[in-house]
Amino acid sequence: AAALARAGKGIQLNRLRWFNRDHAGDTVLNIEGDLPGFVGDYRAAHAGIAAYAQALGGRLPGYRVAVSAWPLNPASDVELEGSIGGGRGGAPFQIQVTVQP
Image (cartoon, rainbow, N blue to C red; front, side, top):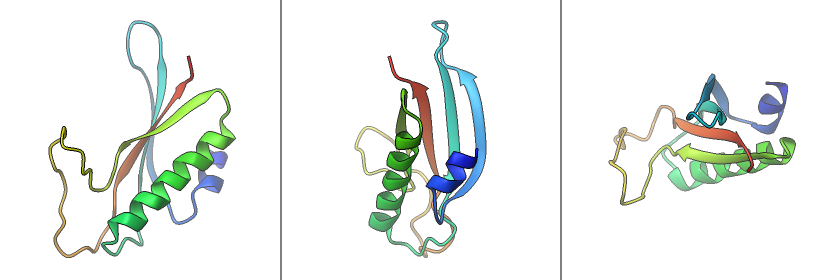
């Protein structure tokens, strides 16, 4: 948890959850966080979250760190979620940490 906090300046961690993904025994750490200072700049939010995931991956050798949910996901294969109204409030995201095969 200390490594998570040191790696993310300006990031608020809301929930850490461990679970087994399947019968193969893959254990996953799901990190839910937010950018409380978010002012509607999605490019900056994505850059900050990507940098956080990269820094976290550098502190956890042997693990795969990947962003699993962005504040605004532009991918065409997912349904748009959240609000893009006033641009104020948080920018929630999720990161998954798994053991590298």
